[in-house]
Length: 110
Image (cartoon, rainbow, N blue to C red; front, top):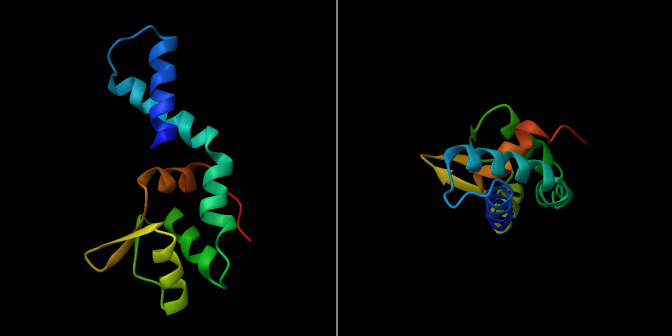
């Protein structure tokens, strides 16, 4: 959230605008995804330590919702890292900007 807020403020100041528009917000989201590369890579990839953990996270690139992982250890690790939320029995990547990063820039796979 801080990354997005900082981007919104920077863009509004650059454009000399006193009001945040949808256009500014969308530009801020794009900028945050680009500038947050190291942050998102660390949060989603580097901290995936268990076998199958990164593969599960990478699966969100193809679908915004997935059934919980079968491996209870992976499930517990994802919940402990607070990068998934449960919705109607499925998991979603959290926060939503992490999903945006994964689909737009999270191209590597180990």
